[in-house]
Length: 211
Image (cartoon, rainbow, N blue to C red; front, side, top):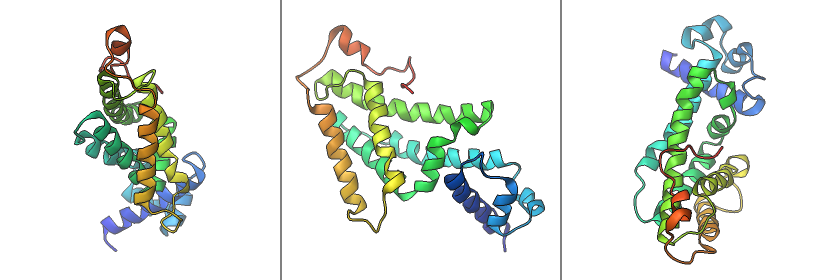
């Protein structure tokens, strides 16, 4: 067996265990047993359990952030694309996304800071799209960052219940979420916003998204 295939087997085993028992509830010996290797062999391929977790969380965020950076169009098109991306990713990589969404607290300060940087950029893309719609009058929301967090949290839940064997296809689930997100943002829209209220919700880069 090649080194790459063994490393991948360890990664898959750790991911299953982290998603099921949590990072704190998963020991190195359990990972080794799940991967079918000895603890001594495991340390040949990975440095620490935390190193495995950071690698997973970096992958989880990068697979969202990369496509999100490419999203263009008017505010409605941008939000629709972001909702579709978030839903599909959480449905298709549910274990990875559950770990990425829940284990930030388990990383040490330096590792956590690297992942937080990716997360903040991703959240800012959402907030900027929503803020643009608020300014143009296409959307109505009391705060762009809060709206972004609410919609991301709604979409994140897909990782806990979606099954390709379920009643709806992934295309149908994604379309439903896009429809609900647009309904949330357009229910009270009345035209272009301006003045202090519009500036307060502008989503500029000087504040981080609400957490």
